[in-house]
Image 1 (cartoon, rainbow, N blue to C red):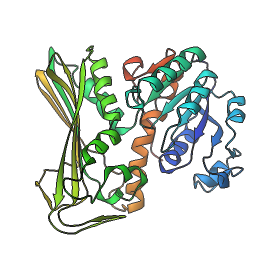
Image 2 (cartoon, rainbow, N blue to C red; image 1 turned 90 degrees about the vertical axis):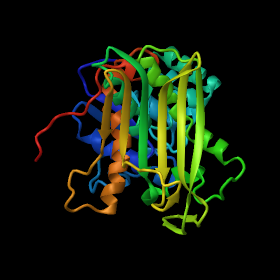
Image 3 (cartoon, helix red, strand yellow; image 1 turned 30 degrees about the horizontal axis):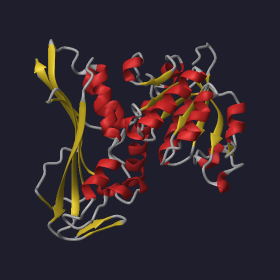
Image 4 (cartoon, rainbow, N blue to C red; image 1 turned 120 degrees about the horizontal axis):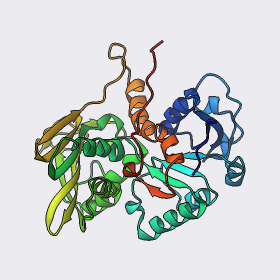
Length: 354
């Protein structure tokens, strides 16, 4: 944890699709200074960040897989974005006094398991550092939902629903665990979905924390929809009768009463049974006095010349930027695992469009 007038010294961890969008934002922010880059694959070691991020120009910062060398740079913050997290790596960074912001399935640490969460919190406190996780959802959408309760005298129930046909991105490795195209009723599929979406349990915990509630139970309910015809899904085989829709509800309750819900409804085909309604938006429902509903749509800056590459980049951008924009607040935060409840308002910057 540190707070100075100089730019925040940042190390980017990995160079995948989400990380490339983070890098673009980091290098254009005067309050941030990129000082290092961790590369997971050995063939990227020694290469300039500008080349790895496809920026078209060198930046004078080269990639390394030497963690101690990155720690020796004394960065204020690591932007941690691997596909799969490594708790040992995270504890090394935190214990060395380096703050971490992450998109690697982390919000409160619940999904990592009690032992890993305790180890991370202890390492952060020992190093006087902060650990924060977000993304578009879980993360920003849940933050927005709690802010939406501001005009309410009381809140009785809050639900965040992510409702999208994600077929265009079905080939991404982060969907391997979802089991698109598996036979109907395939044993163990629901349990695997619970494991793959466990971070939404974090979201329930985080929203409850922001609303001053300590829930005593979090459960997960899973339903499937099936293709009514063979579907053309990039990178996946989805035959008639196989899984083409997944509905997951992570529900937080106190004394048997459901209070907080993180709901995702994903499909990869239009023709499914049951014929679920897909909003292509984030839906926020606050039940209380008064009731408040929000529909959050994410649209590209330029609709006239939109390409598939633009759509893919936008998805990575909205995952990366909630943590990039939070860097200064996290660096100044208390030690330990922190959530939006521990930070001041997290927002982007306002600038004149050139």
